[in-house]
Structures are given as structure tokens and as C-alpha cells.
Image (cartoon, rainbow, N blue to C red; front, top):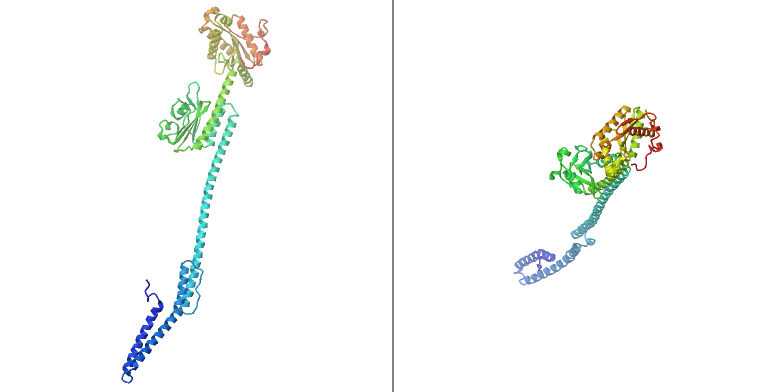
Length: 513
């Protein structure tokens, strides 16, 4: 509860001024009474009443003046302060005088104006801060979207580059069926273009199943080195036909660090090249950094391996097709087509470098008797064995071919008449001296051959005439009793007993024999 005096300024002033005045009046009355009690004994009562009346009138006037001049202006200022306290910063107190209360009102108005400005600034700052926060949030979202867009662009660029590489790879790989041309291109593309520090391409050797290193980039191995199925990372990948990723080679004892990477560890990746469920080889990668192969890169290299596998398989099929078209199915020797292609090439060389070239025609003596007595399977076995003997008796630069039926042909580069006749006699003696399965049923108790030899350019100046001359010499060897070798001599081609169409002698027939 408010104190009745301390809560009101007018009461404080009344006490501060009225009490001293009342006390002073009482002192004066007492003095007058003391001085006049002998002269006018009843005067003190009147004076006392006057003093009390005067004190009451002065107090009333004082209270009215304080209320009008102090309390009411102060009340208005206080009310304004309370409204300002509640947020009414725009109101102003009327300045009603030039005294301290007027100065207080002006100061109060100035303070309100300052507070209003500060409040306005605070609102502006708050709005600016909110706007800045919205802008920062927007910038953050835009930056995140930019990062996402940059990452998307980077991935798209990488994907486009990968697709371009795959397209170039497919176009180049499909442009040739020669395996020796494909492998260097794949090595160059993967090693240098794609930036792999170490890379090896291994192909499966079909007879043994071993992986053979065919090309390398940045590794210390040896081209031609063999890896057994299941050995090392590449051997395991090829055998299991599964991709193998080793993120840290220190954790996999199968990685031959000393053998391939000069003692360095890192991460390795073996990608099998699979075609129709069969592994044709392995792409082996290494980087001297742990966990260096990302998922996107692994998928891309699988695509490269698939492209390379298809191209390698096509090249091998082409090699087989070419080999079949140039190989006799029964003996495995060159066929008639391959014979004339090789002979034509050797004659061009002989003419260019002015050296001799010889052709020897070989016929198995009494071959019909073998078929008649033992059947065609026995005849086929005899032809295969004779072909093996002929192939083992000549030089690596010579060509042995099955000409047709029981006839064979030898192409002897850089061989003159004497050298060719020496080879012919050598193979004739070899066949005669080698025990064969059906010797007993042949005349003389053994299988023999007859050989006719002709040389370029002494006996003929073109391919057809050269082959016909060798055939004429073969006919002469048969007339001479068989099991012999005869060199061509002038007049042999005109022998009336020889039946041969010279026009077709050197013709390359489709499919060969």
C-alpha cells in the first residue's frame, strides 16, 4: 500500500514548507503573548486563531499551487512515460512552461524521439537482418544447387567422355580383324588416353588355358609371360570369370608386388573379358594409391573390357576362318588356295631380287591300292603321315601344301635346280625309310613317293607354267619307276601320256582342297 506522504509530492512540499512556517508562527505568537500579556491578556487567543487560520489558508493555497503547477504537469509526463513504456514512442508531451518542468518535457520528448529513431533503426536492422538471412539462405540453396549442377555436369562430361571413348574404341576395334593391330590400340587407349599408370592385357591361350601377357603399359613384367589359371589376381579373375577389385594390395597375398610394380603397393583391378560366357583374356590395372578405383570407373572399364572382348573374339574367329580357308582339313597343311598365294608372292620376290625359286610336286605311289586294300580311312591316315614327314624335312621358309588327292606340293624359296633336287631326293628317301602302318601291302613292302622339280626362272617365267613343269617332271618320275626325284627337262611337258589341263593348273579354286 502506498505511503500517504511519500507517494505524493504535494504532501512532501506541504510538510517541508508548512511545518516550518507553522512552527515559526507559533513562536511569534508565543513571543507576542509573552510581551503583551500584561497589556492585553486576551490577545493571545485571537492571535493564535489568526495564526491557525493563516496556516490553513497558506496550506490550501500551497496545495492548489503545487497541484496546478507541479503535480498535473508531472502526471502528464508520467502518463506519457507509461504509454512510451507500452510502445507508444510516437507521442509527445506538450511543453506548457519554460521552467524545469518544461525543460523536463522537452528532454522527455527528445528522449522519445531518440528512442523512436532507435526503435525504427532496430526495426530496420531486424528487417535488414531478416532480409540478409533470407538472402544467405537463398545463396546457400543456390550454391548447393550450383554444386549439384557442377557435379551433374562433371558426371555428364565424364559419361560423355566415356561414351566417346567407347564409340572410338568400338569404331577402331571393328575396323580391323587383325589381332596384332587390335592389342596395341587397346594398350594405347587404356594406358595413355585414360591415364592408367600401370596396365597389362592378357589373353587366354586356348590349348593350355594359361593367361599370356600380350601387351603392357607402366609395368615391369615381360610380354609373353604366362600365368597359370587361378594364379595371382589376373589368374583368379580369368578362371572365375569375375571382376576382382583389391583396394589395398597389402591385404591380398595374391598380388605379386615385386613382380609387376617394382615393390609398390596400392590398389589393383582385374577385369575379365567375357564373350558368351567364355573368358578370352583379362585387363589388369594398378595404381600406387589405396582405393584408387571408383565405382563409375570400374563400370566404365567393364564396358571397355566388353568391347575389347568382342573385338578379340571376332579377330580370333577371323583368324580361324582364314586358317580354315588356307588349310587342308585332312592334313593341316596349306591348301591349294594358300599354295598359289604363297607361290605368287615368292615368284614376285624372286623376280625383284633376282634369285631362284623352286616348286616340287609330290605324289604318293600306288595310293589307290591303299584305299582299295584298307579303306579310305587308312588312305587318309597315310596322307596325314606323309604330310607330317614332308613338313618336318623342309626349312621354315618353305611351304608344304596338299595339292589335291594324294598329291602334295613344296614351294622352295631361294632354291636353284641343284638345291631343289637335293630336297626332293631327301624327302623321297625319308618317306621310303620311315615305317608306315600299311607298308606291307604296297609293292616293295613300303610306301614311297615320286617327286618332280621345276625352278624359276630357268624352267618357266610364270606361275602356271612353273607348276605345270613340276607336274611334268613328276610324271617323268612315275614313268621312271616311282620312288625317285626328277628335275624338269625341256620336252617333258609335251609327253603324250600326261593328262593335265594347263589352263587350270594354277587356278585358285574357291574353297581350295
